[in-house]
Image (cartoon, rainbow, N blue to C red; front, side, top):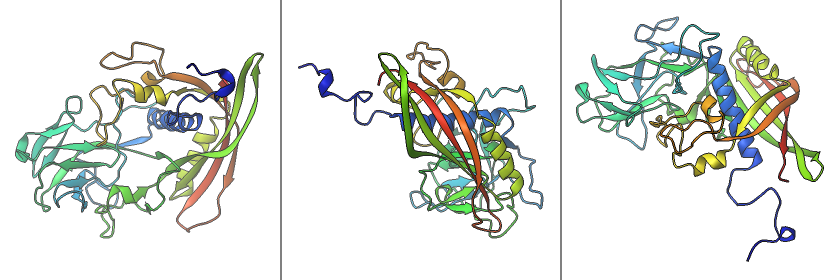
Length: 339
């Protein structure tokens, strides 16, 4: 029996399908992550990179992870490594480093990010593994000695852009560049430490509507908070400028329900945090509609234009003498013709 209009919801066709809130949250995070890379929001760590006060930033450290044997998990001094490729160089003179391999006691072991994302050959032999970019670590299939010297060239983000729903049991990591300190804390799991600066995006429960056109449709006005945390006022103020100056900016919001239903899902990172062979960058994600069945789909996931307006900035009270914060509030206008 067909559903009659007076017996069904409008604008909602399925429980669990991505909603306005989820599409907006993910779309804003994806936009800011990509746009930050285009203005140099990353740092390249090569084998010669050392800390200001000493320490080797390219060196990985063994991490005690209850899910693995000691000697399997090796983490960098900062997490949230850059996995994206093809970053435009209009405003920057270098591009992020995609991990090509790791050195174990001086022997190079290659990584095949577009094949199976595994670590291969070299001295590891059967100890292959994978690169977890969000976690900023290399996970080996077979443990090696925790006294091994493991090095890797990578890029980490200057500022993480995350959902404010991310569990806040995580410990904010101060002085994340001070790798020469004995109490640096890199041996902690990346899941329980969060380096700064960061932007935490929150879709708040405040929404209004206005008629869109004769015959149906509505303008949705949804408030969004950008929580900014940094270790110094310079980084905080820079992120305030970046976010607040997007006032009156229009961007495309992808439809993450369609992305999940795509035969190529997930489009970017797999459940291990490694790039998929058909990884899709943000410009392709919101590009013109194309054949989504191609090996590397381009476009086809555009959903709605969203307009950022009424942006205001508010300082948060002092939590810690070394913690600088602010909240940027903005309203996003979304035209929904089907409600």
